[in-house]
Length: 132
Image (cartoon, rainbow, N blue to C red; front, top):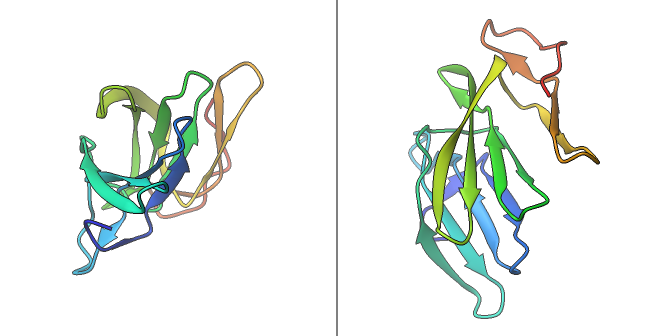
């Protein structure tokens, strides 16, 4: 990878590349950077950065080919979400969840919405309320 990282997301895009976003760097600092892996050339390249640093977030491939990156740790749970657009290589703000969370699950629903459940919340306790 162009940046050593852990607790990041990795999402297979419709074009066959893999979006790798956020995580923690080798020095333990949280990252907002993202990169693409091209399996045909076996190379990594930088792409746009997120507005927020995130680790232990989720990344969900949406029906339109974009990726929703939600939550993660930033001090305590982040309640923001961002959309990655592969055609422009950029992230844009996607709104806020009702509760910040990290180490949660995200599931693409048949209607195209994303159900976000569980994880740890901003008060350092577990989350029982879902966000859709």
